Image 1 (cartoon, rainbow, N blue to C red):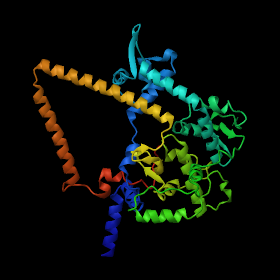
Image 2 (image 1 turned 30 degrees about the vertical axis):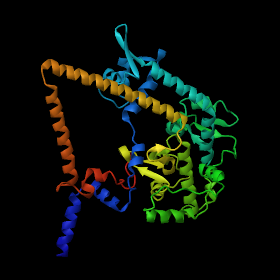
Image 3 (image 1 turned 180 degrees about the horizontal axis):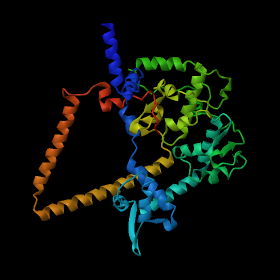
Image 4 (image 1 turned 90 degrees about the vertical axis):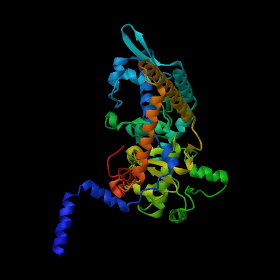
Length: 421
C-alpha cells in the first residue's frame, strides 16, 4: 500500500506544472493584505505615461513639432500598436495635427505648451531642492558616489530634470565631480566631494526635532492588526539608527542593522515625489546602500511602515505614513504640475468620446435605427455583464485558492522571484 501511495505521488508531481508547485510553495509566504486606497494611489495610467513620452519626443524636435510618419516609427519604442494619428486625435487638448505641405505634423496645443513652460519654470525655481536631494542620495551611499545609469533609474521618481548632470552636477564643482576610471560611458559616476552635516538629517529625525521627541517610526496600521502591532513595538524598542551613519560597524542580520536598513529605505522614499519606488530598481542599489540581499523580506516584515504591492505585476514599495486614504499628505510642486497634465489629457479624451458618441447617434438616425432600441440593447448588455460578474463571484463553480487567477495575483511568486520591473 505504501509503495502504491509513493508511486501515485511521484506520478502526480511529474505531471503537475512546476510553476504551479512554486505558487503552492508561496502559500506559506504571507503577502500584505491589500489596501484599496493605497492600491488606488499606485494605479498607473498607461495613457498618461504614453502621452508624457509623446510630449517629450515632440519637444526634442525643431519648432516642437514632429511628422506623423516619424511619430509612427517612434510608437515601437513606446510599445504601442495602431495608428499614431488616431492616438493623438483622442487628446485634442494636448496635441494638434496640421498639414505642412503634403505631410501631416503633430505639435502641442497652447494649453499644453503653457503647462510645459510652467514645469520648466518650476524646475528652475526648484534647483535648490534638486541639489539637496542629490546630495542626500549620495550621502546615503557607502562610498558617497553612485553610477549615473543607476541615478537615471530614479531621476523620474526624484523629480530630477533630464539635464541634471549639467543643471546641477556641473554647476556645483565644489560639491560634485564626475568619475570615470574605465572610460566607458556605463561606468560614469557622480561623487560627492563635501559632506554637509545639515543634510545628514533624516525625515524621521527632522519630525522628531519638530515634536521635541526621540526619533522613531510611525505605524500606520489599524488597531485590529494585533500581531503586526506587537512585531512593530518589538522592532521599535531598538534605538533609531540614522541612515546617514556608517553601517560597517553593524553586524549583518542584527536587529540594529535591520533598524538601519528600514531607516534607509524610509529616507529614500521620503526623497521621492510620490513616496514610492519600484522594488526592482531599489534592489539595484543594494551594494551601494548596503541593503540585505532579501530586500523583499525586510519590507514585508514591516507592514506598518511600508506597503508592498504587485499591481500591474510591478513590485512597488510605498511609504504608508505619506498617504491619507489614496491622497498624498504633502504634494511636491512637481506633482501638482503633473496632475494638471493628467487633467488636461482626461478633458481631451472626454471631448473626443463625446464627439464620437454624437457622430454614432447621427449615423443611427440616418439609418433609421430608433435610439430607444439602441439604449435598450445597451442596457441588456450591461445587466448581462453585471449578472455574469455576480455568478463568477458567488456561483458554485467558483475557483478557489491558486486555481483562481485573481487570487494568484495576491501572492508573490516566491517573494519576487520572477524578473519584473
